[in-house]
Length: 451
Image 1 (cartoon, one colour):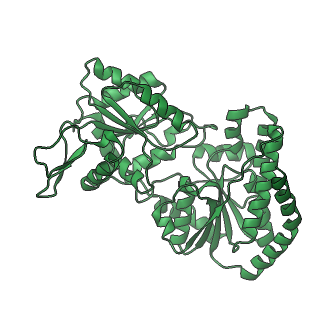
Image 2 (cartoon, rainbow, N blue to C red; image 1 turned 90 degrees about the vertical axis):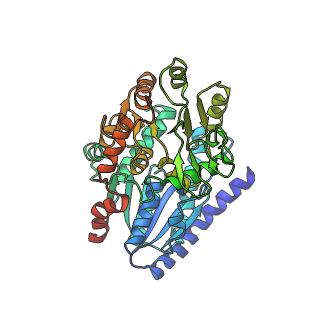
């Protein structure tokens, strides 16, 4: 405890010297066509900021990307010599005192730490900032921009105060303070981007902030996975997860078989198994689907892959293990960044349970699924219609009973070439949806070139 406070006081005393040295460095080394991108979160789990960095680099900018390095970003980012990733240290709250005091000290410490890291980096024409989290990063980035002449660009993914309100309640003093802070400093930015038209309208009407809608779009590596790569992925995952392993041995010992595919030894040809299970990518368990199978409905066995990670991951993993499913298998693999698009491109259906704290953002997972031409069942909320078109590229449900009915309909007589599932996939293939960089060139590039 004493050591932590000594570090805190030392940083306070050194801050003027650090700022002066950093300011002189920025004035001396200012480079053209350079952008500093900031996300006060895990870079590997911030795909939109990774895509911004890649697009900026592709169009002639050098990029310094600051963020936490808890998980591996995409290889494209790591291999790009125009992009430098600078790791930030995630600061923990103090273990003593009231929670409000702990949070306040953490915010102040983070503000000084981020200020120091930014001042000792090469300055940029722009500072691209992901919000949320915006406390304290919006104020710090605005201040640094004032010192060096950088233009602040805020990319609004959601409202930070609305996420905080899920924990403390919307009328909590901290939430009200966070809302004021976000609105006040958000107005000081030079450019604003947002993820939906609903958010753009809300920013304009309630906060007097003019923003440009930049929809999340899939990157080029989200696409349907060729059958040979599917087989390779299934064999790889089968090494650690039994749902991907073959249910029976092939007649030819040299034939390589997974739960879904097999590769013939002589020709190397990969085919799908006739009695293969359906592969579903989701974030929940499937008790209702199991009961439908046991009741005699003509449905396939189901392999449900739960992706992502979070504080409740282990809790739900234990709950799943306690279920005695006979025809539904659930696994929670740790996927490498390059394997996640391959899995989506190999699946039969995606299920999204994302609900927005503000009702104004859209689930990035569905964007990635659509990039892989993967139909989706998604739980309904305020602006979901901007992404999921009911009965066109997927289905929208209100509760678990409606979802169970949709699964029964979609997987009836699986795999059925004339079924609704294949019709949705065909619609996605024919939609000719824009990829991220194509959309970025139309919406963001003119803004950073004109100003």
